[in-house]
Amino acid sequence: MKLLVFFLLLCSTTFAQTIDFETEKSIIKETLSQYFNDNPNSVASYLKGSKGFKMATFGLKMGIAMEEDEAKKNDLIKNLKEFDAYSDSLVDVLKTKKINVQLSDTLYAYKYVIGSSNLQKKEDWQEAYDFLLDDFEKNDLARLDTIIGKAYIDLIKKQIDYKGTDKIIQRNELNHGYYQYTDASKPCEDELCIKADKVYRAVFNSSGSKGCYLVSFYCRNGICRSFVFIEKVNNQWKYVDDYPSWLVDDL
Image (spheres, rainbow, N blue to C red):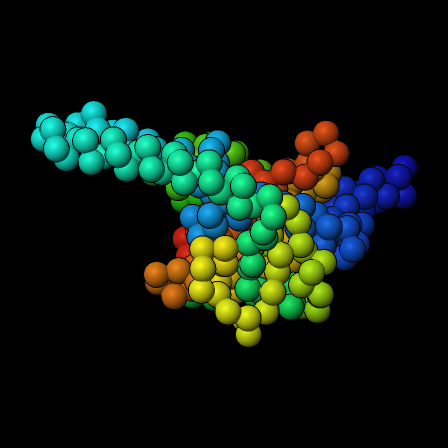
């Protein structure tokens, strides 16, 4: 009986280790393109149905509804029509061209750096957990697109405690959908380019149904980084949402 209990505990706590690196890489490849489709740095986010398109059209429509000056209202209506036409034109562009994503040739192991608190300590983590729980179960500040649940907080903790190592990859192993990954020596001068930075290795829950990795990219503040949450649905991995890492580790 003791041996049986030990075996069951071992299986429940080591499932993530059974996801080998090739599988991990394939999962990141499948979901990274979905993440970039919602990233404002990607023109694909302005395709109809995507997050950027919805946000931009909502803003313009709200402006039209609230604007009292007729001339300004007409300008906004014109902008909405032009943006709609721009979104349609992207469909044709992306049939023949790819979005170049400048990216490191390494999948990095996330290294948590101790700041004003040490989230590797039980007491400090509990305080951070209560803060995160408010976002993940209430989302009052709308940091997430929707309520995704506390299970993903546990994956943030797994990243904080992660002991994996960096792994070199061929960038083109991540090519998928609208995206091809290139090094920073190539020009990044048009809208079909994203100045990304790093992708970090994934961790998974005990059942292998949810995962979390990180992505960093250049933004107005220098480097922005997010935890990227994913889920396996009907044997397909799907991007769920992302969360700014600076709320956890000051970056």
